[in-house]
Image 1 (cartoon, rainbow, N blue to C red):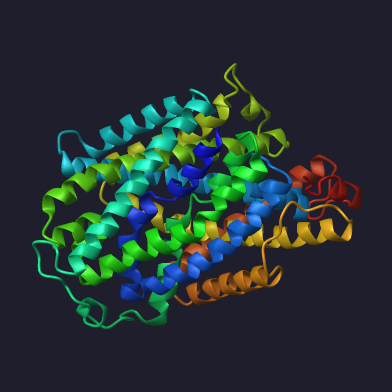
Image 2: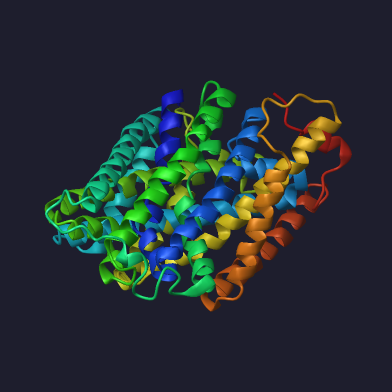
Length: 456
């Protein structure tokens, strides 16, 4: 991939079902206070991505945070983080296919939802088999379209607030009425956090993709610098417009929040056009997530933490088996769309949020260990984020608080406990595999640790 591919992917990788569809679920969980959920999660993501960018600049790897976790905490931990992220992306692929099929069938009710989901899965599996160069070019233009759509939405929304559209401006009453700014209390903010975490999922794919660019250290630093203003502008701006334009408990916000906001502005035709753009954006995210999933399981296979056949490359240097394995749940999702077309998207969105928190934790802890190890050993470090290690500590405290608050909410507690159980199972499997390979299951030996410390 070229530098422009990676930078644009960093702008568009997280603009998918989490923002276009999941934002409605977040608003339903917390009301207008979902803005606090976005602010908290956004702060953690900014710190986490800066830490990840340092490690990528030091040692680019297609396994990214799984590789760094293995180097910092041992192969069992690297196995767990890699497989958990792969499972998460496989679920996201199914969610993106479902969301895009759901939207398109609503706009153009010609084919059943499951047929559209099947077509999307076949097409984007084929694209990922063409090679990374073609994938990068495809994502460049589709990410540009997504970014343009969100910017256009923000402009129209601001014009609406100032009375420049056919509908009367809403004022700010929707922030204080219908139960107030905190209609669900602090528990609502906690419940919204896992939904919001799903919205930010995809940003970390940049670290995986950086390994397939010419100058990973320089390109990933450029890409990560765009994250701060993207979070503030795209996420906070879009969701703020939604909760100002419509009551937080409006059914239309839950179905399609972007289109509902434009309809409220008296622009239903524009809402329909945006609906088509959103479908394309979701499919682009499906494409990017399939790429990320395939590279992660390829990396696991290379390191002996997944079946060996998954790291086979064809003459285009595409890991075909890894791509096909990563599409499996997406095709299973086609069947779920046939059986439970209305319910399946909500189920998938709820599962993913808590798994992302594990990735965040692993990245922050790995960065603390690897950077201090490099300093202790007198090894160079390409560039350093400001206020280290206090930013990492702050982010870890925030994540711990999110988990603690989440345990007080029944639905969120179930997700956290289910993810914890999955982590324990993966750790045990990873420890057994590590032992079979003759390596420590929790902490690498001193010699191996020093050999694997990131270096420029």
